[in-house]
Image: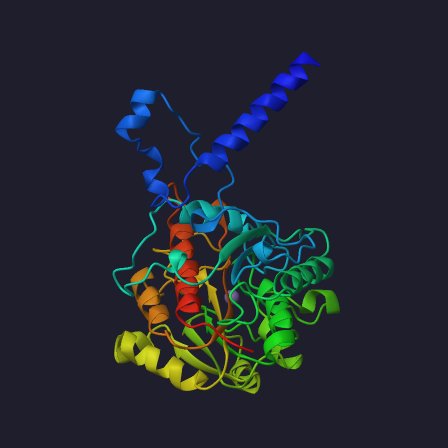
Length: 374
Ligand SMILES: [Mn+2]
């Protein structure tokens, strides 16, 4: 009993130490600094390192409990989708969400040199809801659970309802099929939306082409989910791919991609039209519509993002992608994700996770910059 009490005391102390950490203190790199006074007092707080800190130093919030209070509300939510059983390539993206969070906490946050704003201290209340509880044993159940998680999280009024009516979600994947669950949920609030899809693959494959029509269960995978998004009327024909370079199976894929409502910007287009040209084409395609941004990390060259299921050489650099994302400022972004981060293939510096974290933060900056009313 005495031992049990001591254990509880330790736990309470640990939790108290954690909550004493000043999250408003600018950023994670600061965690190793102490003020002179602190040293003199012998006052030590627990480092938030490896203590479950959420994305970009946000604390993890339970967004799934039934709580209608004002304090429980938020405007933008981060949600992990630990799922990789619908990949056609190397698995591992189930470990993406914690890796991206860890990557995000390798850097400090504050005023952006590019936007002149601090997205974390602007009008929006931002929370990290942790991960959706997805089974790895049944894809249908897993995707249904994810869709329900999205609906629950976006199902309450936003905190700043005068600016933004519905909480918007940024998902940390997870293989790319997780985007279909997100789009099924956004459709409920926003109707069909344009998708700006950064990827090296089109992901609109007809299931008979990719998977060979083995079974209905196999039909939905990370290379066909946009086919299903089109079939289910979740997306508009103003959607567009960017960074495409992986080979197609045959010409019918091009026709089918068009039928699904997509335009294509290839990876090499950037060498001819530049970053500005890419931004202009994206904005032109989706103009006057609401936009979901989906970033498959394999849009980056494997030099910048080696840890992904189906890597393709000849991709964009992190800086090019970040500049393009920033160029989407002003569009009405109603949801977004960064997916296909498979940490088992990452290097010691967690290069892929670091890039993915920066991409997710860029989407966050766009959402803060432009609130959306239903
Ligand atoms: Mn993809």
